[in-house]
Image (cartoon, rainbow, N blue to C red; front, top):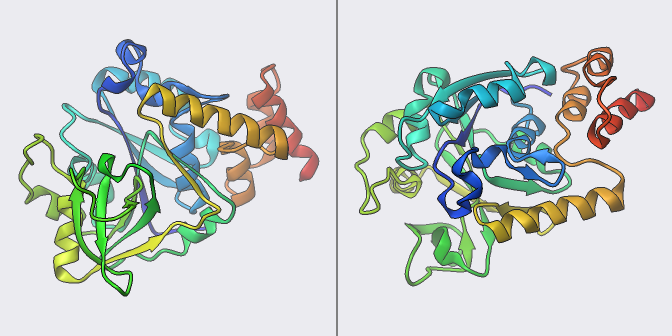
Length: 291
């Protein structure tokens, strides 16, 4: 499984909604059940066949991320780190990652978004964003909390607004975005909103105006969780716990994805985990029985 896309994970920000838990640690390093939060967006990109990944982090957290993930070679990928001096909105990610992207199409995933669903990786790997932008839509109970869209009778997007007081529809835009190589240039031209951020919805609107924005509703078999609050973080951990216990298959096991993609040999995985007694490492070591 190969891809010409590059991946970006926005894992900066202050995590203020999770304070005081995030007073001393990045939100994306907090656990979602048995794995750090950052494993889940990494798994999303890796399942889509993306090996070249840039993680945007707070300057004072870079060492912690490097200690956890290294250069990505343990998972058969290449990880670059870029620091975010100040959290100025999702679209800022394209400005910060401009040199890394080097004009290539990309997939941006928010570091606190969890996607779980059979066949999701194959669906994402088949998305071609060489021209224009492509997003997903997801039905939520509180569209006021997200980027929100208005659809015409053909199911096409007519307008997009960030966190509307009066929702345009029941559909929110999950934190995964596919864009062509022009995304950084477009982001540079955007001003900050009244919230003081370079809004991702403003960036998407540049594509919408040109008629080059496509959308697709995420299937009912896919769960999308935004883990920005204590309640959401707990719910995500409980979902992962229940699914893993019922199915016997670990979600967001990076070594398993790398092995399945043919990016790493089991012998390397075995060396890395043979002296670790955690349930995660035991699961990883058992992967050798299936190869």
